Amino acid sequence: MQPSPQVLRPAVPPSTELQTVVELTGARLSGVGAGELSGVVITGIEQRSNAVQAGDLFAGLAGAHAHGARFAADAVERGAVAVLTDAAGAELIGSLSVPVLVRENPRAVLGELSASIYGNPSQRLQVLGITGTSGKTTTSYLVEAGLSAAGLRTALIGTIETRIGGQRVPSALTTPEAPQLHAMFALMVEQGVQAVVMEVSSHALALGRVDGVRFAVGAFTNLSQDHLDFHADFEDYYAAKRKLFVPDSHTPLSQTSSSWSVAAQTCVICVDDAWGRRLAREVGGRAPVVAVSTGLGPVAEGAEPDWSAVAVTTLDGGEQQFTAVGPGVRGQVSPEPSAAAADSAPVVKLDVRLRLPGRYNIANGLLAIAVCAAAGVDPRVAARALAEVDVPGRMQRVDCGQDFLAVVDYAHKPAAVESVIATLREYLKGSNGRLAVVVGAGGDRDAGKRPLMGATAARGAELVIITDDNPRSEDPAAIRAAVGAGALGMAESERGEVTEIGDRAAAIAAAVDWARSGDVVLVAGKGHETGQEIAGVKYPFDDREVLAEALCRRSAPDDKDLTVS
Image (cartoon, rainbow, N blue to C red; front, side, top):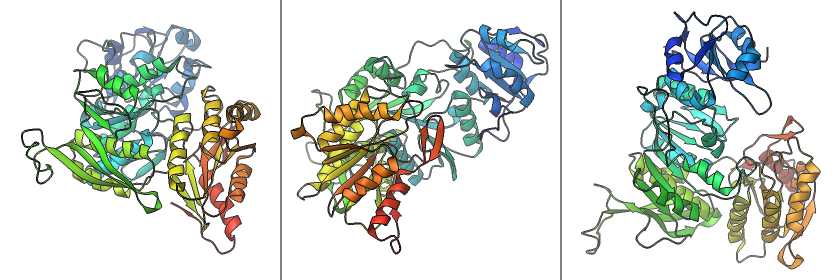
């Protein structure tokens, strides 16, 4: 048997009779034990055979490379009391000592079935889902800080980690599969969690990982090119994100079951880009819409945002402050309202300070305040809490006493690279400082963005060092060539110097050696990640640690203390 992965489940799970599962799914029975339903009780559900626990229903699903039903015998040996699969899976299983439930496309009911087996835990939580291309992680951290400041017991599910109270678990997926997600929700309920902030990826929405989740609030950050290896095109990518806000036609597991659409009850949408403005229109009257804008994009007449950012100021060290203007409620109206405003809706004006640089983080901060307000938190409390938030691997400074700025950021798509470079160029404004960017692209992912990333970096930096990111199963040299083609495809007068160093540690060291006083070194792409995947093997690698080592070697290796802030 393979070793069991770490599993987060309630200590005292609810029990569901197998007959109820049969009725909910409409499955037919097959295999040995088909007529022996009496007394069979389900206490969990799992699609990973090596994570099965005694009392589980094992879901043997068709996968991209293998059918999960091939592992049914292993699941039963570990304690599964029944198996759910499709007709092809039933043929693969053959004879088993437990009942086999057969249903066409079992993945279509996996989310709601998981919710039912764990007692529909998201109904007893305030679940706040955040989707979009960039900013999900940062916004999630900011929202959680605002909720915690209001005295709520919170949980966080996302790219960097899953956190329930004080317990941290590294995340393999931005959004877990449905059985793990609902099991975690049940554990959260058991531990007294009141509000959950979770990133919701387009993969999760398209593949049904969040089916059966009752979202109190859904938030949208922005949309730009990413994941077009998975989605057919931009429209398909947008359609997946849209599921969090606009319900698909949906047939519940049974007419009497407590099923619901994924679509959130309240929608908070940043309308700075065309996709956000379109989404706000398409939500229409289905649910309350809270529009958020930093003023970067055009706003249609009569469609002024509910929350806006004004008086944006960059402070020493890259921190920012702005005034958030939004709908006031009793006790939250700004003092001395004007006579013209006396007859209109009350307005609240909040002074907000962020440790995070970049105009895009103004959007993230404003969105976070609006989400907290939609969740019933006093926005003044939430706004104060944002000032203390740092996000691992997002514009994270690394300091070893050097006389230039060194930053690690997770930017791994063209728009994100462009935004980070724009922020750092703003930092350099008025000085003779130069910018070096270390950048690559991941293997087995959207190949179309590779030349775009190269071109974006070359356009904004004096030095671009193209290196390996996570090549995964692809040829690293071919990925570098695609990024380099975009960089070198620009006229020399429009770009900086471009070089290629495949070894990522050597590339980072070269950028550090190039830098002089007043410059900026940006290491982009991996952010918080602590491994580099090459040819199916994940090697330990943390950009922050590697950058710190290079900086300290340059500065004074024997007497300088490194700081990652």
